[in-house]
Image 1 (cartoon, rainbow, N blue to C red):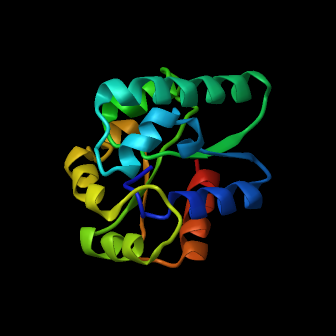
Image 2: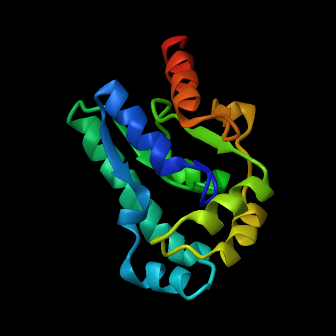
Length: 160
């Protein structure tokens, strides 16, 4: 979890490959109207997000019911969103890719082909509710190289 540009997709996809788990890109669960809204520089509202979050939660439930382990890249910026995604399951863990605005803004400015404009980054930071210790998150700095981030996540998962 984390704001756009924090490296969620890169880290989650590589983590899933390393662990041999299934991977999903949370952005793929957005309805077309949400993508169009973001592409035009309009921030999503909670009303926009609920169906998207419900689709992610359903995918996670389906994978868990099938006995699969999975990793999904998803912003999950607010506690209410994380609660909706987890659906009360203590088995769903959130990895918070944390980083400073300036670094992430520079990353967004350098990337090509993504619908999320840099102009919406501030709204994501404004929406962000960092996970509390009671949510049992794994918090990893995005100022580290992706390989180190992945190693830190694997080590933390194995330690629990």
